[in-house]
Image 1 (cartoon, rainbow, N blue to C red):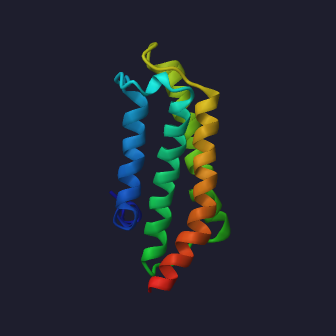
Image 2 (cartoon, rainbow, N blue to C red; image 1 turned 180 degrees about the vertical axis):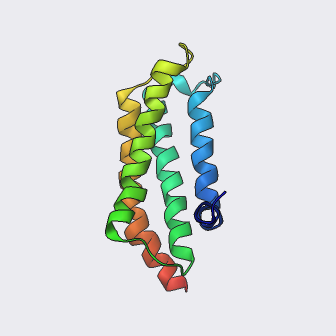
Length: 134
């Protein structure tokens, strides 16, 4: 593992764990919980998964006095990368899970909503809160 990768693991361990958890949860066959009876409950779960993961990212980002990302890096890491990952997961669900899962454009849209909400919450509210703490 290169030194750049080690820095990412040290700086964002919880974010990386949440990201891995998203991959696992999205690729296994979901157990029956009863929640599926509630209309669009899975969309709420998708928003919460991505919102939560990206809020964790912002918390880890703001809590250490390390060099900050440029504006382009911020957009890539906090908007483009998680939305692209979401699209990739939906494609894998559709074409590589042999019918156990299916890709869904509405899941992708819900994931994107979570990422976009987290961008504004993390960039402005979490950053402001942590700067007040320090």
